Length: 350
Ligand SMILES: Cc1cc2nc3c(=O)[nH]c(=O)nc-3n(C[C@H](O)[C@H](O)[C@H](O)COP(=O)(O)OP(=O)(O)OC[C@H]3O[C@@H](n4cnc5c(N)ncnc54)[C@H](O)[C@@H]3O)c2cc1C
Image 1 (cartoon, helix red, strand yellow):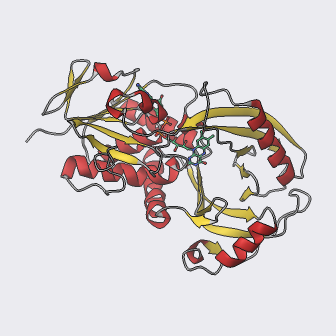
Image 2 (tube, helix red, strand yellow):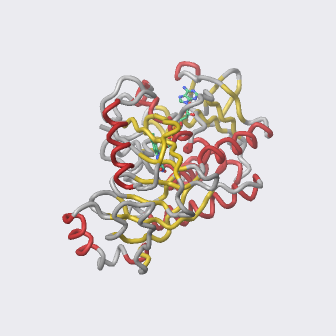
Image 3 (cartoon, protein in one colour):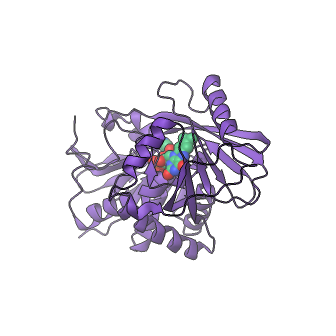
């Protein structure tokens, strides 16, 4: 039997989780990444939230993903001697009468109960506008994606398993037993390249519907408030005292890193209607979330190229889902376990 050795393209949340999963199983790998200053994973706020959206629904398979994320990031943190995963209280404030009515109906539903902190949130009325009418969530968290990606990269480099490269599909030759890149042989390549995969010739049939998003870095005196707050936009107080606020969704765009002015101005308006404390916006970052229409994520090998695999479509939940998804794909490639039909690229061929 050929000993596995895997090439990963992309060191975002997807590629990094894949590399850790392989390292845990002592499978050799090389991770190649363009090392861009601004990427989706570097820009991400890293929020992990159980009850989301206007409909106040529990995020897809939250319990399984959260459990896996918690132990995965703690293990990585322990290995790297650094903490980047922080469980946090999460206060969702309700916007208007319609949302309040919706919440009164939803709050007794059994699926909500594990994530509901029964204590009503008490917020400082000097810091937050209209702090009444909200609820607190449990099992929410924040991943410091920048620290996690940087420390992981340093670790992979120390293993000699991380290189800076812009890998084009034509640079990777595949046959029935493996792939070749820069004169090196691998048993598989896994493309984990985020929204750029929309241009990958082997994925031309995948309905990417990626969304550009912007996040603000804000300075304000939160009077010691550490919880994540949300009404119209979310606000994340970070341990260094800075705040992040976001985010926008733009479905039509030309430039990946330049937001539309009206979107930014709407985000600032939402922020000011949430935050009463004087605030100044000190920075802004924009990137594109990889989204596949009607899918929570897609993974697996290409139908006609069994040594070429993909992990993509993490949407706005990469921090939560990448540890579970990466393990699932690695087990499929190494052990031959079946992929979840909802996530299997081959079963969802258009
Ligand atoms: C504004 C905003 C806010 C967000 N907030 C959150 C949040 O709060 N919580 C959360 O969980 N998620 C959030 N997300 C979503 C999250 O960022 C994504 O789910 C996640 O980053 C996707 O990771 P990825 O590895 O698939 O893609 P990417 O992060 O895009 O990583 C792909 C990597 O591959 C590299 N690459 C691409 N092509 C090549 C190539 N040809 N050769 C070599 N390297 C290549 C890129 O340079 C990049 O490093 C947010 C996203 C945005 C934009």
